[in-house]
Length: 221
Image (cartoon, rainbow, N blue to C red; front, side, top):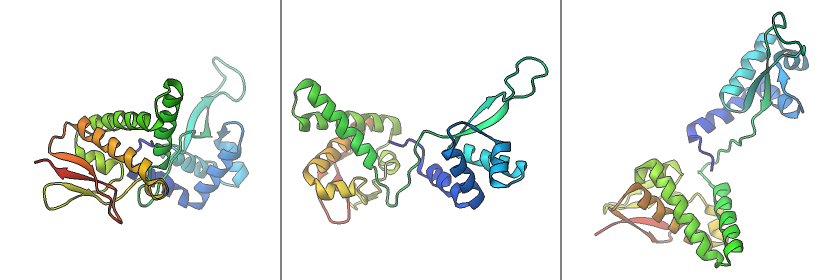
């Protein structure tokens, strides 16, 4: 799962809305080797200062990585300062509206498949265990049930009875096509989240409703 906050991912994608910046990103992305400011400026017919400004903005947003290298091949005194070079970052930046976590779901499913293959346990059992353990880590990191749900796109809202309804399903299309598997995964994941946060006020239950997540956090009696 992409651990960068949603606002940071939006800012990174928005950086490419500027035409010169987008052209520089494309140029660096197509290059097999790291690209220097001079080469980028010459390729796009820009001033060196303009190229440097936009390349550094792309690096600040995590879209490019930076390295330093002496292009002359000389070392020691008189060899000059290393040049600042840019490469496309290997990490992905993804934004979806509403929030969707399909890659995250795929990672859980593949991990469960690997475990099932290695142990001979039924795949569904492995998936429930993997989802619960992953949810527990998510909850421990967030330390608050509501914060964990918000961070991962579930859009929690008070239900008027002390519980929470979840306004968004991050696995929406998968749940439409593979309802039993995905909703079961979701339930175990969110039970793990609640346990990881130490929450004792809510019980996670399946309650499929059109337009919302299939899981609901009921107030524990």
